[in-house]
Image (cartoon, rainbow, N blue to C red; front, side, top):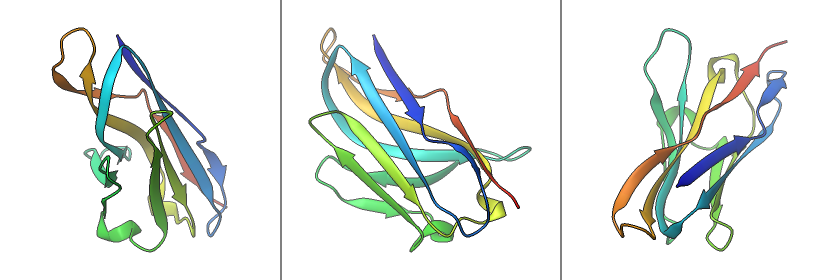
Length: 121
């Protein structure tokens, strides 16, 4: 009923930049907090950044000052601008959204399929 689709991942050299996008579509009544998470090989998935519908943001310390999360409430999209990338940022990045469905009017968590970000020279 709801899909989150990420795009924008790829291979970048250390110090470079990438911009991730995530689009939520389907029978959506409202989208609340959205966020980006990442999972490196052999590690647990960790929170990178979140943004509320009102634009309040939160970042993990390791990306603070380098990454910027933003959203478009009309298009139901969330973005992650990643600057000064480091090899330790290499991971699969996942989009998450707290979404109320039109059909049930219940708020549920939805995840995208992930997009690979590789930082390497």
